[in-house]
Image (cartoon, rainbow, N blue to C red; front, side, top):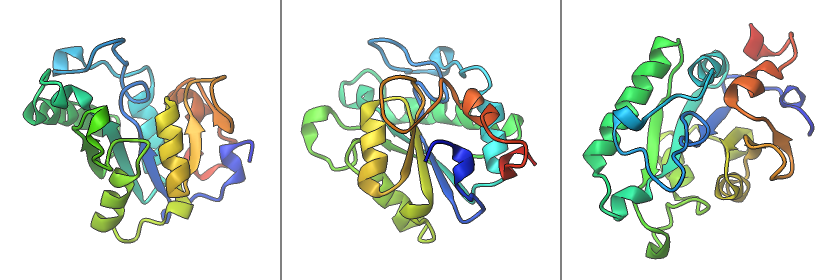
Length: 185
C-alpha cells in the first residue's frame, strides 16, 4: 500500500492517533505538563476534523511517562487533554476517547507503547473496533510497532524513518488524499 487512497475507509474504520509530535508540538527532553506548554501542530485540528467525517471512532493513545516521574499528575494530564479536545471540537473534529499510559519504561505495565494495552482497552470499551480496519498514526518507532502488533495499518508522521506510509504532519496527510477520497467530501 502506497497511499491512504488505496484503502476503502468508511465509518466502520477506527483511527488511532499518538498525541505529542502528531497533534501537538513535542517538547524535546521534556513533557507537556500544562496547557501553557501545549501547542497544536499547524493544521492538526483541521485534519482531525476531516478525519471525523469518515472514521467511526477516533482515539488518542499516548505514553505519559512524566506522571511516573512525578513531573505531572493525572489531573494535570486531564486538563491538557481537555484543552486539546476543546481545540479539536472548535475546528469541527472529535476524539472519542483519550487512552494514556502513566507508567515508566521499566514497569512492565502492558499498556505502554509499543505494548498493545491501550488498543485492548479501546476494544474492551468499544467492542465494534476491528484492528484490521484501524489505522495508527504516530511519529515514533514505538507508535508504529504498537499499530503493527495490534494488526493495524500504520502511518509514520516523520518522513524517512520508517517503512510504509509517511507524512510530515496530519495536515500534509489530509492533503495527500485524492479529490474523490471520502475524506475530501
